[in-house]
Length: 127
Image 1: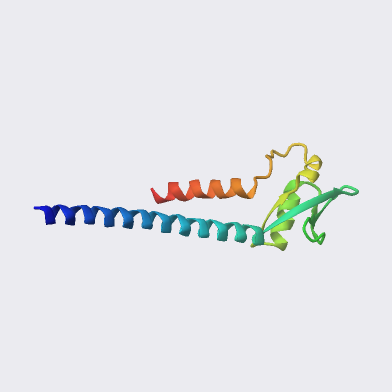
Image 2: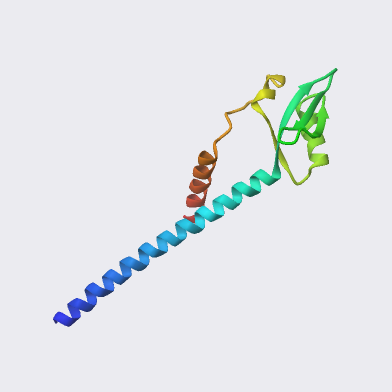
């Protein structure tokens, strides 16, 4: 009976270790996936600085200052951006939002906030 008890306890310890190890591995894999998603987001998203000209708004890549697109209003800017960069997304920087008074906007999330949102999305997808 004593040997059986030792085997049961050893099995429980090994099982607990394996469960814990599996949880750590899943968390590490999720963190790696989230970091990869953020890197992809940065590569595929162009932040836009905008300036108003005569009846036209000119948009520039805020990282490189390269011209990106132009338009008379936000809808035309969206259309022209997608025509030039069909595989990319964009956002207008806070410094340029005053040019679009009817636009709805929120503060830019930090990397930590983005990671937290992605982790929450990952948790809900896993269930």
